[in-house]
Length: 597
Image (cartoon, rainbow, N blue to C red; front, side, top):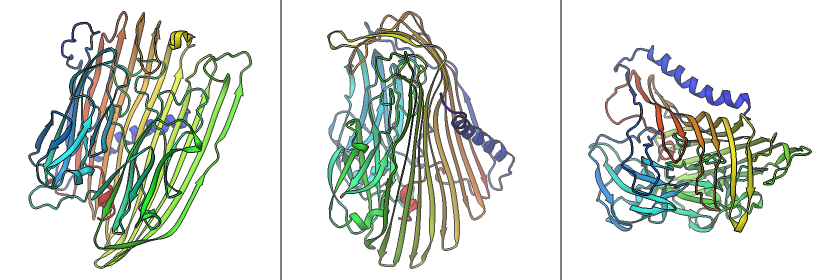
């Protein structure tokens, strides 16, 4: 069960956002009045008529995330009607948005969808188990694939209508290209992109590279956290040096052992899996100028290799003359494990623990000096990663845990160039906990006839929780001008209760659900976004909160009586001493702007 401190940390973050909102409402704006918008929607619109022969899919999945910010320009729209060569419009773009829509009917579970451009994966998500959905993804970091080109090569999941294992599915993709507003300068996006796959990757790092980042998604098997889940992470190895570590995010796309736990509200970022970003600019002195061997490998010689994808982003600048390595260190802390076996406990799936806990810390840092035609830039980066897992097995079960993972990344940039002096201090904290607390005994029968798996069990869940939160705090001094910002984005399932009885499941690799005598769940979800920008006495706060609650009641068949009880959105912008016109300020800080590219 999850510790009180971790519960307070998550819920405290939500309370903090609400307090900021309330207090900010009391502050008068000198040039703009507070703006708010509250929307309440009950019982979302039903899906299209289910095709004949399929169980009903009568619930529409709302997208619980803030829409990506876009400029006030008219987009050029390109519909993807087939994969392969895609004609694209000519231009320089402020923002590029990928719109994904789809529909599932039948017994479809954990179907990954992806979209790739010129070999780089730009989006990855998992379809909801039933119903329709829509997601908008900002893929502007990949602008170099589209700028001043007439064609790109795109690939992804099957377009239009097609069949899945025991159902029917629709996938549609559309690209929206937003031009740079007239009179404004185009954003600084990466000039070079190299896709990264598990194994070896040969990459050439030019000597005029000003900044380098690795973006990745690592997903292991859905039940990787069960039994005795020791630390399992992945790292990036460049020419024999550890460049970055990556946690495995515990994506519980279909609810784990209880396949209806998340219905009717889907898990955090299920539709749009989140990239983990590592700033490796501080390693440029070790890796630039030659072809390097970049490996993405499982840590601790783990044989478990799941879905691993990534991209290397390079920002080049003709004024950069080269890099010199100043320092490098890496410490991979030992895994500490404590366990106790309970006499008389029989668990056919794993060891008979009554208590299991494991802990691990990883630290690494590096520093590079960039020489430019106008001066020098010193980039320092340090990362601290913490893994904590605890499991209790009071009964013959194989999921009851508290798992917390956190990565805190400190980066500083000192620059001394002609007409450009100052520094940037940046802290990025990524925090994701997972907990299963049982309210009653789980009992099940397990057998393996003919190589198939059969389960027949009853379960009761209480307070199932999964969350993912990213916060970024930045202070910048540029020629004595001070700027600071705080951006926090969080997505959390909390307080989920459920009961699931008499299930037949067949596998491996897929699931056919039948013989449901009762299944009832209540699910709560909250998505929060907070941005506070401060510059020379001017302050702006943008806040967006989406709260979802739903009830699922399956008494005799699949996906019936699934309703949203709450679907409310609150958004507010408060400006103090700042003009409210121009480009929408509700945007995440990009790595490119932070490094003064």
